[in-house]
Each structure stands twice: as structure tokens, then as C-alpha cells.
Image 1 (tube, rainbow over the protein chains, first blue to last red):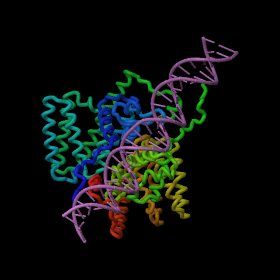
Image 2 (image 1 turned 90 degrees about the horizontal axis):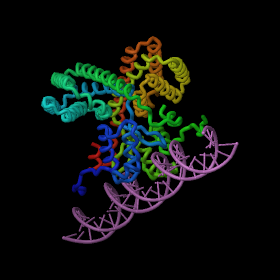
Image 3 (image 1 turned 120 degrees about the vertical axis):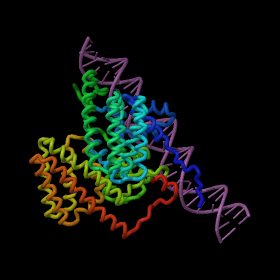
Image 4 (image 1 turned 135 degrees about the horizontal axis):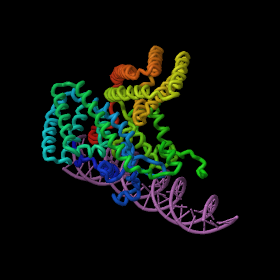
Length: 242
Length: 242
DNA sequence: TGACAATATATTGTCGACAACGTATAAACC
DNA sequence: GGTTTATACGTTGTCGACAATATATTGTCA
């Protein structure tokens, strides 16, 4: 049997490519919360049709990065204190679940990858190279979640992580926080080695709920400083938001 | 101040209308698992352009009802034993969470609605009117979840419910099962009244995990009877599915 | 001048047509 | 006859244009 399609590489659709770029830019803060992503503008920038842009925007909306207001377009999802609380609340339960499952699974090769990443993170912390630490941290957790063997669960958890990423970015700002993060990873790796799934579950949940409280107080303080008014004010739109 | 937009009703986009119809049809089994939803066909049926159809299909895919295979289209998500297990696993944790939160919230008016629905369900069980019971059951749980005050959580849980709906349809087939369901609702209402959030959490989780096992064995038995081969067999597509 | 109506502008919503891709069928070659 | 190459077909992917909608601007009248 001959494989006549030698590329074997699935050519990504234009919409998918746009999604990848925009998602990263939203996470990195290039687009501010409540920012309006105009279709025509993006079509010109990426040199694709508005159809592809619309498809990309819809995908991002379904992932929670954008919100669609009919006849007004897509806006970067503004995450207030309440939303952060809710997202972290869900994360706290799902992510700890994924971790516990991964430990029960004991998929071969995982522990080595985690240990390797953990060591690299220690180096990055010493430097200190925050950007590198940040990326390694993401990778560490994604590998952990994927090792749960539950695809949907891992995908959901990874997506939630990305959503809160823009707020967590500033989390690793102080070295004390990085130290706490390192300790956390060491504990998780230890739990993995010894197969202590339940302990890891409780530990991770606890940590995430702590992070949630930490971030909430931070956001509340910020929003007090600059009481930002919503960009849309008409009665109809307000109604749509409810 | 005059409201010059007297409709005040948000005119739904064509895509949204199509979504509503197709989602129900998928849940009701009009479209079989692995069934191919052709854009041109649907466009002709609904008398709208393919653009609107594509948007609708993408939405349904993001909700987990369809899977997109590039250059081959959208197919009704086939849920095997593994997927059922995973969905129920996630549901067991998230739904019990929503219920516990709703009980902690004690939003006024909720308990009356739940009690009213529960009594109607008892009637439907006596009849027995399975269709009515089924719809009341859905409403009961949606109200419960929404009362959690956590919008995302409620939305996620409700969506998962719908996804497993096509398998649960046959669940209320015997009267013994309906009786167990009734008992479960009575317990949940009791927990709500007495504010026993933690008890409700444990109870609901337990029940869902039981349902999961029950359904899995059923599905496994079915698939043994009719070993259905996948509708797509080429190497490329198989690769895309991984 | 102030309220209301009419117009202009910007943006999303919808459409039909063509291009690209993958598969099945038919033709050509040994 | 069996294998390879070429062709035709069906379906999704992409595009540019037009329609519908909401807001902002201008014009009109008291």
C-alpha cells in the first residue's frame, strides 16, 4: 500500500493559524480586556478573508477568550474578580482531579519528564529568568494533566490555565512566589513517585484556592484605583450582557 | 428617555437558530453517531447560506456534539464507553459541586420551584409518562445548577448533561429506575432545605458514578453485539483522529 | 437653543461563486 | 490482468460583495 499523500502534514486552515496567533496575543496582553477585535481590521492584517477571521474569532469565543455581542462584535473577555473566582474555583477541582488521575495512571516516562522540567525550573529561578520559568511551568502542568489519560479533562484544564494566564503572569514577579512554586512542584513530583494520588489531590486543590484568593484581592485593589467604565453603554447591549 | 428599539427582543442570528434545531436533533438521535452533516444539504434544508451553516456547525463542535475532520466535514461525535466514562467522571465532580454551591447560596424561590417540579415528576412517574418525566428531570437539574450563582459552572454542567442525554434517554425505561430517580430528587430537595451542602455533594457524586458504571456496561454489551466499523478508513483521517 | 427626525458612517450578518482538497472512477501502461 | 497514472466528482475552504443593523452626525423645526 502506497501513501500517495507524502506530506502527511495536515495543512492548517487559515482560521486555525489566526487562532493560534490571536490567542497568544490575548494571553500576552497585546489586546486589552474589553478590546474590540474588528473583523475587517484583522482580515487586512492577516491578509485573509473576513470569513476566516470570523471563524477564528468564534473559536476563541468558545474557549472563553472573547465574548460576542451581536451586531457589535467580539471583545476580549473582561475578567473581573467574580470571574477569576469562578474560574479558579472550577480549576481547583478539575486540575487536582487530573493530577490525581495522572498519578493513578503511572504512565511510563512521565515522571522523568516532570523531574527534568522541575530541575530546569530551579535553574531558571536562580537566574532568575522569569519568562523561562513561566514557560517551563506551563509545560510541566500540561504534561501532568495529559498524563491523566483523560483527554477532555486535560484539554479543559489546559484551557482554563491559559485563560487565567494573563493574570498569573504577574504572579511570578517576586522571588518568594517562585520559591513557593518550586516547593509545590517538588511536592507534586514526590506524590507522583510514591503514588499518593489523594494527597496530591488535596494539596493541589488547596494551593489553587490560595492562589485564587491572592489574585482576587489583587484585582479588587487594582479595580479600585482605576474604576474603568464599560465601553458599551446602550440599553440594548447591557441587556444582552445579562 | 425613549426606547426607539421597541422590539427589545434580540433577533437571533440564523446560525443560532440552526444551532438550536440541530442540537435537539442530535440529542434526540435524528442524526446517528458518526453521521455526516453536509453543509450544502443543510443550507438547502434551512434555506440559508453555507456560511451560516458553517457557523452553526462550529458552535456545535465546540460544545462537543460534533467533531470536525479537516476537509471531510462535521460528524456527530461518536461516544464510546471510554468517552462516556470520562464525561460522567467530569460531570460527577462538577455537577455535585454546582449542587453544593446552590445549597450554600440558598437563593430565594429556588426551593419552591424544585419542590413543584419534584411533585410533577411523581405524577409523571405514576402515569407513567416517560417523555414528560424526562423533560421535568432536565428542568429540575438546570434550575438546581443555575442556582449555584456560578454561571460558567452551570453552563458547563448543563452542556455535559445534554451531551449524555442521548444515552440517558433509555435510562428511564424501567419503572424501577424512575423510582430510584425520584428518591434521588427527594433527597436532594431535603438536603437543600436543611442546608446540607456537603452531604448533597457526596450523594450526587456517588449517584453519578453509579450511573456511569451502569451505562458503560450497557454500551459495552451493545457494541459487542454489533461491532460497528468506523465510517472513515483512510490513513490520513485516522491520523487526524489521534 | 433644545428635542426630534433624517442622513451618513461603521461594523457585523448573510450570500453566492470559485478554489483547493481528497476520493472514487476511468484510462494507460507494462 | 494488475499496477500506475490521469480524470471527474463531491465536499470543504476561502473569497469579495451586498444587506442589515446600530451608532454618530447633521439637519430641521419650535
